Amino acid sequence: MVIKPMIRNNICMNAHPEGCAAYVAREVQYVRSKGAIKNAPKHVLVIGSSTGYGLSSRITAAFGGGAGTLGVAFEREASEKRTGTAGWYNTVAFEAEARKAGLVAETINDDAFTYEVKAETVSRIKRLFGTVDLVVYSLASGVRTDPDTKEMYRSVLKPIGAEYTAKSIDFMTGEVKDITVSPATDEDVRQTVNVMGGDDWMLWIKALLEAGVLAPGAKTVAYSYIGPELTKSIYREGTIGKAKEHLEATAAKLTAMLAPVSGTAYVSVNKAVVTRASAVIPVVPLYISILFRIMKEKGLHEDCIQQMYRLFAERLYTGGKVPVDEEGRIRVDDWEMRDDVQQEIARQWSGVTSENLKQIGDLSQYQSDFLQMHGFGFDSIDYEKDVNP
Image (cartoon, rainbow, N blue to C red; front, side, top):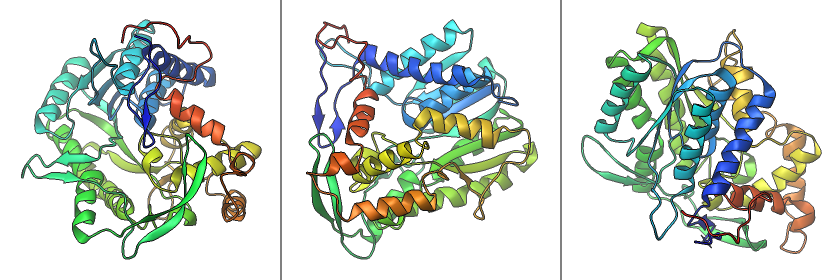
């Protein structure tokens, strides 16, 4: 079939296999160009390994440190009539690249929230590595079923306490308009925390620890975001923010739990990038578009793979103490949150319109990043050509 992007409500419904392979190859090449990371982990489990920061973490571990990796992801396989998800194709491409390099690379494609998948992961670790020395937790799901109660939780993107009105954007058309989001209920908050908080991360580390598959000194890291004053009401002070606070509090509990193996848990606060999740958060795509232009002008712009390489090489695996903020968090959002960057965004924000967005923001970069993470928009690929999905 000829595969063209199908986009509805800022969600891409399909993916291009050759383009996803090009996306992975580009990230692999970036890590190789940066060179080996000293003190890097050699056996790595990535939970949520198929897209975004999870995929970039896996690529960094493999091609920056020579690590064997086991991934856990839940992606839709291709069929005769429809494409697979981008994560499905990314995983196929990553495994091919890793094996060409002589690296162990296997993936469990199933629901990471279940006890059965945790047990399968333990079994696979024992067979492949014996133990792992890094566990990356990078799940991004809107739904989670509690493995004990069987209750299904659904996360929501809402402010807390009052409705929220701000500028937002349809990033494929460039239309800037005001949006209003109604406030969350207490039940909305509870469900969102149960999906996106630290409970499942805790269950994973407990299962790995009890099975004896965490190496002495093992690290685990999960990913979070804080963001600027502009997005605070919908993000950090909204339902997602409550979930992120729970995730961050879980890190301290996990470090205590990991004491028998001298392990440590961290939350890394990363910068805003284009992901499937961020594309559907009101206000965030417009903020990112303006952020990209300003950070490019200052020579500070990073995408997922650049962020993850810096996290591994300059934070987690320097050979010394891991630098953290007063809340115990690793900060690789430091360039985004610089005063000069945020002051310039705030100055531009109030005057942005559909007509001047191309001057104020970098909408073309946002659109390109969004398309390419689904395998579209690569000059090297003929998108008029028939492809077997």
